[in-house]
Amino acid sequence: MPGNHLSNDEFFTQLVGLFESRQKKGHGSVLLTQKRLTQGESSATTSSAKAADDPLWDLHPPHPVPIIIRASNGKSKERRPDKVKLSTVVQPGDLDAFYTRYAEVCKSGMQALKKRDRSKRKKDKAKKKKAGGAGTDAEKKA
Image (tube, rainbow, N blue to C red; front, side, top):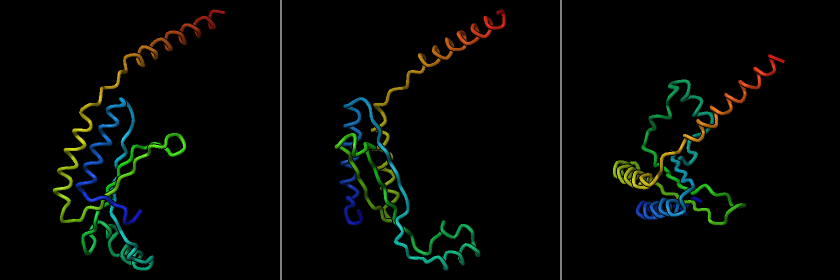
């Protein structure tokens, strides 16, 4: 997938579309992940030497590292053919502007969410407790 990354603007356009398609269907998931994009520049010997000096050496690299952001609708290929996978690379200098826009897109995508109805679940648990308690009392009397 290296080289198939979208530009930041294309990523946001398609991410909005992904949220909208989920809202139209009324269900579904959008998986968002992010991590540092490293190119395997350090060997095992240098990493062990760095770890001995400073156990958190990877938190402050000598030069800023780009971030890869991924989004997916989480549908497996076997069950549904319409799996969507998006990714973009954000350079360290663009992170503030990117995260500002990223937060806006995520908030707008989550506005249509409905609060989960848990009243039925609580009623079912109460019924089970009553039924379970009655059964044990009947067994004690017999």
